[in-house]
Image (cartoon, rainbow, N blue to C red; front, top):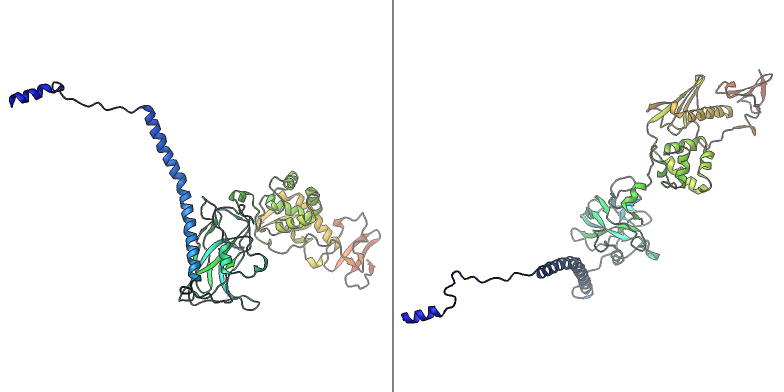
Length: 449
């Protein structure tokens, strides 16, 4: 046995090499690069494939549920009782405030959250009503072209659901906020609602906000309640909010905040070149010299456009400031748009019913002087700013007596300071004295003093 072990040991060629180790093959640089590229490719491929698979699965699930619901409705054994027609319907209490921008809260025309009401449409009137059970309501976005044709006053539940607009592929939900609300006692307020996308990508380029009933408590789901929807409107990108018009405008707003005057547009540049930069500047000149401001704007602004712009400007909030112009024998109190609120001449407070041709012309001259020296007027906070103007733009400047202008006897030499205010009389200077026109004279007789 010893000889055998000796033979075996001597036959092993590696028996004399201590700590023998197998050498491992080192990977090449090309194989490392190839492996990294493959890993990156798989990551990118999976990232691109995931949303596609999600969309396909979502569409297939919706399609399957739709087919399933149709089969249930058509199956005699599983048929659900059709909703009973009723005169109940949902309505929005007020219209949304326009314009609407993405990422901006949607409010009504009074800047409050939108509100839904439950009404009974029996007859010609909409009568607010209630149900004993709470009503679950879902808020959705509708195509602006719906309803169309003969279905503008009524539509089916299927037609309503068919015109619900979903978000674009890869986008966030089109409408965010409190989309599922509960109506109690016939009233429900909508929470913070915001659009995440504009409306330019659908054919109508307009949206509506709709509300539909999804559940009525205490087993009253057999009642058909008509869905509500707002008027159609455009949703603009929030970047356009920087250029939006203000409703109502403020006196200190840039003049391009008014309708028909675009920022850096032709009208804006023309007004700015004449120092008309704010809504207050616009209204002051419009009240003092409307013909001048029309000349500044030029023929490009039509009569209709002017009416829209001026009407919008007149809705501005007047604030609480008033302005005082003082002279040797007069004191005028004006509102911020250069309309005289109160005039005191020779210690007598003038009232609108007392103003005659000469008096009116004299006060108008004083107002024009105040306009020219506006920066020198005394500014006071509070007071008479909310009182009606004594003289307003557009009122006739000349009154008539028996068909003739009351100031027809004035000559070119007569100055505004030559008359003395008297509530009952007007005194006119002439070469031979003063002729007195009596208010009480039915024939307009002339008396020499």
